[in-house]
Amino acid sequence: MSGTFLSKVFDGPYKSVPKWIEIMEKYISEKGMTVKKHYSILHIASNMQKSTVIIAIVFTEVEGK
Image (cartoon, rainbow, N blue to C red):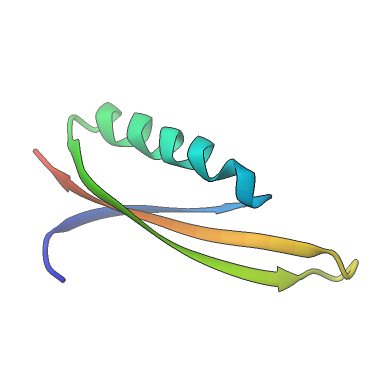
């Protein structure tokens, strides 16, 4: 895989994925770039309180600047 990518790490419920994509798109546009394609990696883990936590890495292929 080659190209220019920006990434951010998020945590929260799976239903928040669309919100995280919106955050990424705003972050990218503020940098004067445009989105080519979003990718994500989701990791499900338990925290110290034994509750399930979703950690997502959203990385986006961008163009510009």
